[in-house]
Length: 240
Image (cartoon, helix red, strand yellow):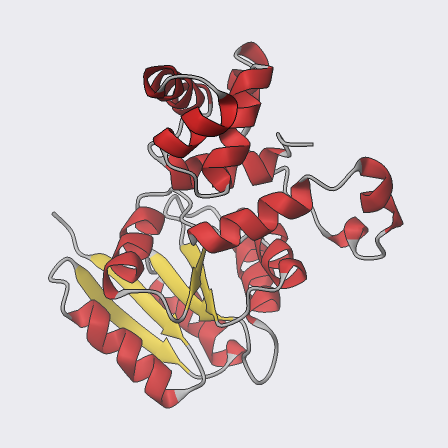
């Protein structure tokens, strides 16, 4: 099995050293390079083409969101079959920042105060071509998605935010197998962090029925777990 090649772009030395130390404990992860600013980071990504780029939002010369947007555009224009997944890391849980990161093309979003296990999971999931998002962030973003169309149109930032970025195949799947009203109710509670027992209590149904709904939601959204369900829901604007 090939090692997951990771590039780390973070301007704070102690934070960068700490992330590196954590990831180096994983034998399947290889740090291929580091950068302290966006300009050097872009050059690093172009030359190393890692599996995952861990990018800090608050870089000194441009934001990590701008870096992500530029790099993703360069990937789309290139002919290389290998694609680098971008994992945004930050202390910010601001809705606008999170939405802007995904609009720029970020694949995953992780808080800097996350646990060792979650960081490793985030890197591995991103390397596999899937999205990973901190559950707390998923709730924040999905709450924004639930804003009414009129409210969204009134927002001056709405024109710069586009989270409907599912693949054509996924969009076709969701049109073919749409979620029922009950499944949408379950989805909202999943994103709110409710367990199956809590969902059953809130919706006055049995735990067995909840498990059936959760399984159907996972299948319809082609997701492996609840985290991926939240990501796909927020990108597709499923919850209105």
